[in-house]
Image 1 (cartoon, rainbow, N blue to C red):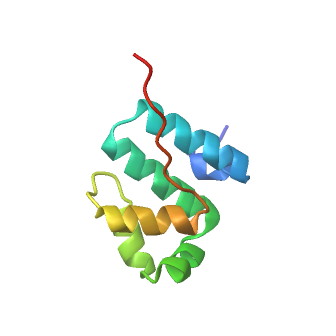
Image 2: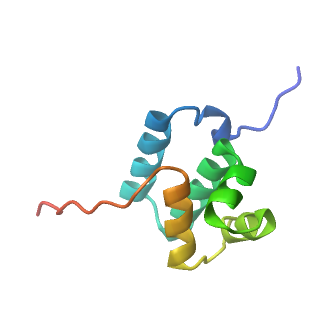
Length: 94
């Protein structure tokens, strides 16, 4: 029996699923996991499309959104806008 490697990008097939995934990571993850999750979302939508919308090259996107990368905040904001997302702050209840 042959198995394939799990790729979350294969399951990010709607805006609702993308939003749920990213919100879960934002709530529970660390900065590295958040960057990786944004990379998964960009991959699911298509790096070529994201590159066109951000004005960045595909190789730069792959590098900025790879495991262990430390992209600039402006890069994260460009990619979030390109994938149709935004950052929203809700108060934390003590």
